[in-house]
Image 1: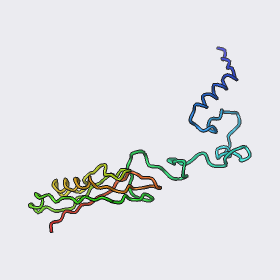
Image 2: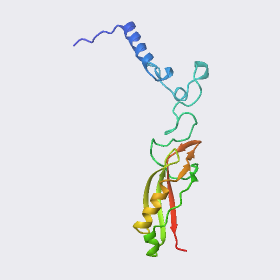
Image 3: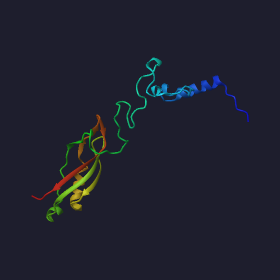
Image 4: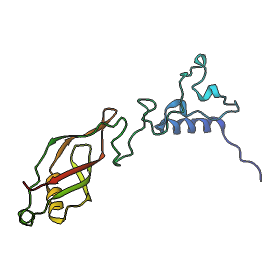
Length: 171
C-alpha cells in the first residue's frame, strides 16, 4: 500500500484552526518537532528564546494562583488541621431537655460528627456517642439550627468535619 500524501499547507491551516478553537494556552499548542526537549525547555526555556524561566510543571493539586498549595476536592469535607481555620459558631440554639428524659432522670453526653458547609450551615450530623434516643434526638434538633462562620483554608471557605458535644445534665 502506498503512503497517502498530505497537503502540508492545508494540514497546517487546519491544525491552526483547531488550536484557535482550543482553550489551552498558545505555548502549550506547539506542533511536535525533531528538536530534542531538554530540562531547560521543560522549566520554561531560555529567556532569550522567549521562555518564562518559570516551572511549567506545577504542583499536583495546585490551583495555579498560589504555588505549592493544594486545593480541596470539590464537595468533600476535610479535617480541621494544619492551615485549616476552624468554623466559628455565630448562632446557637440551646437543646431542649426532653420532659420524658427529665422525669426518667436521664442525663449524659451526646457527641456528634457534623459537616459544616461553605455557607456555615450544618449539612449532616451523625451521632458518635449516644446518651439514649431521647437526648440524641434533642441534640440533633438543636444543632441542625446552628450557624457558623465557615472554616477557611488559604482564605477560601471549605467544607469540614466538626465534632460537636452536648452535655445533658440535671440540676
